[in-house]
Amino acid sequence: MYVCLCHAVTDKQIREAVHNGATRMCDLSRELGVATDCGKCACMANQLRKEAVQALGPASTARSAA
Image: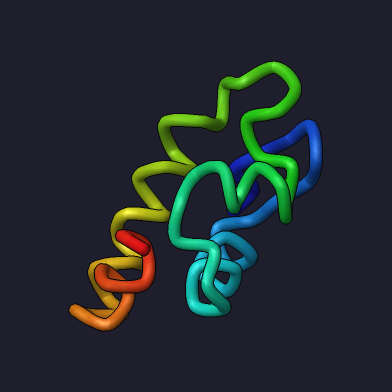
């Protein structure tokens, strides 16, 4: 499903970016452009980010805290 219509970013792309290390919203904004134009996608993108980080487990939490 498309999450960010301004940049044509899907939920799959967000999960993949988190899996590749983009564990913070600023990482997603920099890499995919989410929440950088109209901002309507910010809440959904952040929720997907949180779910993807949780799915990665404790190792990702340590990485995002650094």
